Length: 451
Image (cartoon, rainbow, N blue to C red; front, side, top):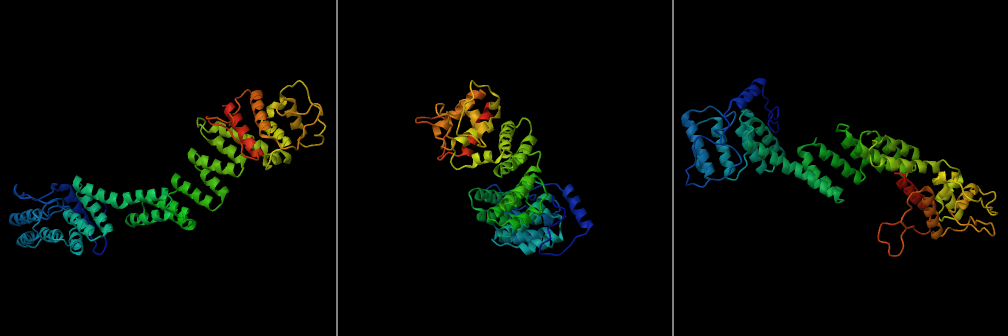
């Protein structure tokens, strides 16, 4: 319920006595939708969206003769006879009920006597029927704000289902439905249309949280970031607001700020995953590890994500030749040995029958990884000429074989590679094959194999 009557075009103010009187009347009134008289059974009636002047809380005390004329006038309105109703209003004498009946007659006649009803309602602020009638007149005049405000106030004075439902219906139509339509437009990639729909809703309810959040998102989509930030400033800083703030930082290209904003929501796995995605995108693997570690232990992405981040972090702190092997646009055999051994360092401890002698890898920084790959059969060597040919481009067959043998050594299932006729999900390399592609496949295999 509203605490005070809507103050719009009229400047009248009412003291505590008037408010108290209105409250007492609201509590004491016997709630009814119409007057005492009823329409004859054989006369067709119309549905009116406002109550009888002689009903509801705050109605004036009338003599029996006046009550009879008001009831007769109400029945005339129900018969769609506004002229007869005005006659009855005149016969009822000078009082608030007769004035309301007169103004209601104008509505039935197709007019919208907003000013007269405002004056009446503010003069008698506890008269629920006057406020409810004013809402109908304002709706007819196209004044949505006044119609909704007075419908809510009138329903607060007279919480009958009919008036509460009408108030909620107006709110649904003019605010909730417009916000929903704005959301659909936003989802369909039309942020400008979304803002247009939201403007109508926000004109009636400027503090509507859902509308303000959607307004900010639409502004972000249009690149109007300062305005989006200003819009958010009026909302309490809850989780949703923090998420939108993170989007603003992302749109500005301030990835570090976005990570800090998202990761501030430690109890929100969705926000943490968004921060993780940004950390991985910028190869901030230590940050990614810390964020994965902060996820709940039972979160399905924690264990695998943490393992993958650790492997990526391991590579990031390795010598320059390891990082170069990952970043080369076309992988050679030396790169392949480096990537395979670095991402599965446990293979260096596995026994083998013989350590091959290779004459063409002397003084290469990747010598240790090449020897490990050769002695474990991860990569074939020319044992007759004792050559590894480290700078020759690795062909896809060699890459697939190295990954498959690695899976066998680690006792984990190797990936299903795409071949002619393969129907199940499979792994395919884009050409030319890069170190990063191979690293992604190995990390995925190792993570899945250790789950």
